Length: 215
Image (tube, rainbow, N blue to C red; front, side, top):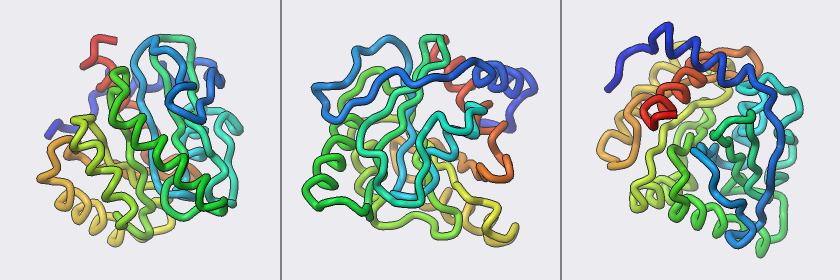
């Protein structure tokens, strides 16, 4: 397990996300995916876990990723770029969604196909609601990532809505749950898009990953 982030990593994270981030592409099927042009990181999670809010907080853009109180609004893989050879992918939420069953099944299939077969994908940040922890719906995604040997890291969202004691207990419980998973990064990050907690650390984690990839 790596130690705390260095000041250089924290600074690099700030610089990466100080860029002007914009929408570049959306794909509703594997055939519609844009050609690979650099490193991709993806954000996955259950419907209404706060993916879009977290991406907006990371990029300092209030409405870059669409947010909604209606689960299942993101139905495509949405690609964002800050101008360099590095892309953020906002994935459809899995699990509960207010949409027809056939459509939910289609984008769930898209999620798994992308996760298992995209060489440019360097890491998936699997978002987990800090009030609820890992659920059964997360397990199939983690298994897909393990089977495909795609690195992933658990990021707790909405951490401000749990007490310090509850949050620490969940971090320890989650870390223990993923300990033997072959593709899981061992450190669990906790964030709050509303309060800004953990955002700098997540940026630093991404900067560390890109440095390890030679970017």
